[in-house]
Length: 343
Image (cartoon, rainbow, N blue to C red):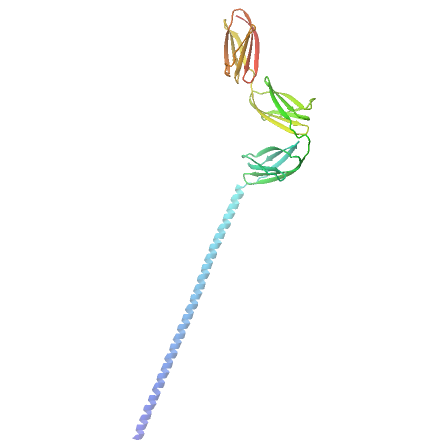
């Protein structure tokens, strides 16, 4: 009996001892499984973090790509704009070769400019002096005459057209002369003609005169070396006269005058049985009419007021009379007629 009880006791103890061990094993397994799950979760978290990092990296790459694309587009627009501007500028801005030449006469030099396009302006200066600027006013040809200073000088010229084309010109001029004075020019009237007189204090060379744009007529110095005198016919109407006087040292004087040319007045003399009738005409205006009948003179005075046609009647006695009539116009030209009439 005791053996059986002991055996039962031992078996019961064995079960009691085995039961915690089983529980421990299960706890260990549960703990191990939990650890595995935690590790798996950690791995999943790490994977998510890595994925997020990768996504962030991809997002940054996309963002950088977009920025780079925008920069390329802007750069392309700038290049296209510059190309269009260059093409437009090449179309608008026309190339021009501006020609500059100079000619020396005495102590003067004449600057001549020829351009294919309108000239905006040109400037000149001697040596390092202050520049003088002359506007072109849209012309394609310009000319300017200037004096050369005494001594050794450098003439500097710059020309600019309206398209921005420009050119420079430089030339050396040496002028040394004791005679630096220019000739003088005087004008006077002689009937329907003008008298031009050029005088120099040392020696004259020649004189030229021209009406409007006609070719100039040259008169060289003769016996009187200091003076040249010429009689010039005046054309009818308003005309521009240009006179140039040049002395032996090539010093030059120029005079421009606008002259109102006219022909002499015209008139007729007749009678109506009791009166002497004078009918006078002039293109620019009659100044005075002077009538002399048998030695007795009478004048219209200042009563005509530059009329272009005048009819005057002078009472006369019967008989034969000698009549002399002089009609003078406002230009100083006059015509005279003398006739014998019977009334």
